[in-house]
Image 1 (tube, rainbow, N blue to C red):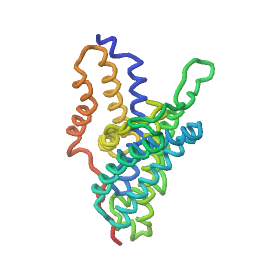
Image 2: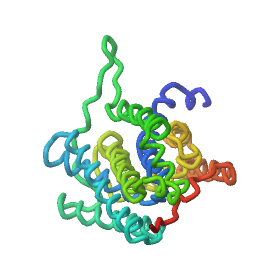
Image 3: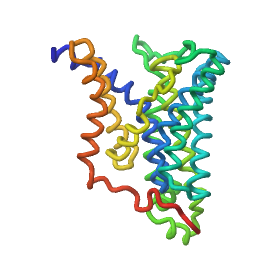
Image 4: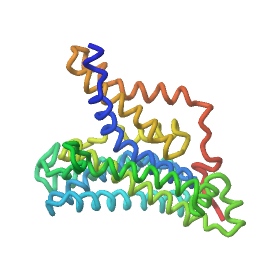
Length: 296
């Protein structure tokens, strides 16, 4: 039984399961490094999944669907930025409201556009890239994910922009006294999180399901936030945590064929998430001004 569960295929499946979580978690890193809590990632992913299907459905081009997903995620993040940064509304309340709004809006628009309840028509997924001289194939979004991880790590910790963004999350008043536009930096972090969260949602609908299903994110945005915390607000750490969660999800899928009660199997990813969070409580230190509005 153990040999049937643990295999190279399990690791490949874990990598695929970690992709949407990683994109969203990276988005959370950018947002919270700037000092803005973005629990709206759940809604951003859902809107991104919907946008990817809509764009692909009307153009028959999944790359257009990908751009649509990023645009939709950007718009939801923009609302969150305006409400929480400009108007200084509680960031948790703003994110929660956007999650609820996104669930209702995508359901309404899906039924309006596709004339069916529950799900959209199936769409064409992205063409897999083939390794030269081999039969191995890989999703373009996996390649994009690894590229974004590396670029994010460099940008946040090795560039002037990253230094300013981190300063806005640690002490925005000190950053402001040195001439940093705190409002602009925080906006940029939240908007980047929207684009990346939209990419995560796009993977769910373009690669994982090739269809939009109402509420299809099923809490992945919150799991991505847990990955961000476990990864200590770093891109590489967040990916490592999300891969662990992806492994739990892949294990859940593998165990379905072994006669274990379905109810228990479906709990596995969430149990792992809770155990991880319990383990990092008091150890992972968030940016000092994370979630605190800036008033000039």
